[in-house]
Image 1 (cartoon, one colour):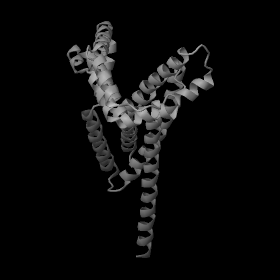
Image 2 (image 1 turned 180 degrees about the vertical axis):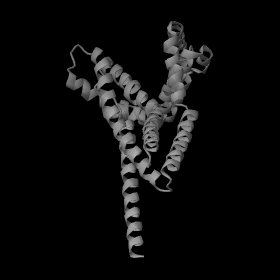
Image 3 (image 1 turned 60 degrees about the horizontal axis):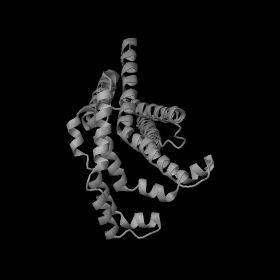
Amino acid sequence: MKWYKKLFISILFFILINLISAFIFSCNLKNVLIDGIIKETIKENIVRREENTGNFTIDEEKISELSEDERIQEILNSKEAQELMDKYLDLTVDGMLDEESLDEITIEEDLLNYLKENKELISEVVGEEVTDEMIDEAASGMETKEISNAIKKAIANNSRNLTTTEKTVLKGYKLFISLEFKLLILAIIIIDLFLIALLQKSYSKWIKTLASALITSGIFVLIASVVVKLIVSYLTGFINFNIISLIISGATTTVIGIIILIIYNLILNLTKKNEKEA
């Protein structure tokens, strides 16, 4: 193979690694923000509330114990809570870019629906039965929509104070996690592999290239996850910053690449053996 073909294949291989890595990050960024930042913020607020209700000091070990309380984790990890945090993360970003999106914020209604749908879970957590009367009482106290109005005002104020660069970053985030962006990456990956196959003039060598790219991308994501965790933990103090979705995706991608590579080599060796015997 001529040197310039090898050079082009190397460039396409490098691009392929970056495309696969970008796809993994695109699929997991929102989960990392929700699990690693939003949930941690909620847990820290719960811990501070517990600390402030008593005339004593809670040490780091106790704080960690409270923040990892199974009851708190059970609520935050429920499907409904996840969907609620997902919704308001999107609404916050949208509201920062377009204040008209703030009209969709109805936190009181969403919280009441959450209470109604999760009465049993919340009853177990608080150690007291949550009745319909309690929910109706909570509903009457939320009729003024003070929470929604406060959130809308806070987002609107922050939106007006955003710099052009910060708004560009938010727009980039929305684009990066969008379905359209993921489909675009997949399309470019297919084109990239097609070009590699053409340059290699083989119907099967590109499979080995894909496997190698998957392994490299998976390892890169795993390393990047650890680095991100260390940086965010240092900057924000979130000791339990959750990057499990990235770690799982990185490990899964690596394992898939290894499996493809093993199968490819087995088939290749078997084919060569059959050719020799023929």
